Amino acid sequence: MDTTSTVREQILDHAITLIMLRGYNGFSYRDLSALVGVKTSSIHYYFPSKDDLVLEAVNEYSSEVLNTVKAIDAALPADAKLSKYTKLFGRTLGDGNQICLCGMLAADIESLPDNIRHSIQAFFKANESWLAKVLAQGAQERTLTVNGKPENAARALFAAYQGSVLTSRLFKTKARLEDIEATLKVSAIKR
Image (cartoon, one colour):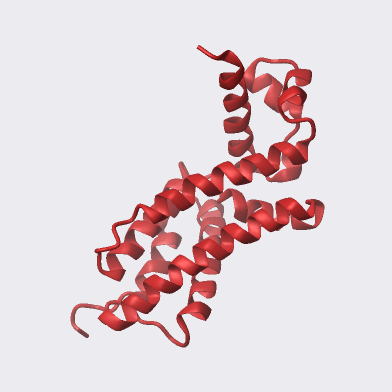
């Protein structure tokens, strides 16, 4: 068993969780040291600076989320795709105290270097692009209500998802997240 890889993965996993809970400025290498059971110098071995660690966390998180989004069956109707996407955000919330890692870091954007900012922007753009395709499909199928261009609606929708996880955390309920999806679906009576 490669313990070097295991320690690195543990550091990264805990960093992702801490960022989702507290943001960039809400954790330190000392916190990670206590969670992983290694000295802070060991963390510096893998991630020389906090910015190196956070960039790796953003890339890991983005890859995982975007792979999950891409795995949503392309043959599904748009409203079903949107439901699966909403559930993905629900999993991000966990027990109600976590926020999308990139959404949390977007709030800290002024204290982050440009390379992390660009990775976060790429995550947002990839989600918005996928949502625009789903919204265009939904408008064509008449399963989703889309006002204006799908690209503009997708940006607003992604912002609504990000905001919903904040308010879901605040009020300790996932209902706010589910409200987002419900506002776009065309009821069966209207079809």
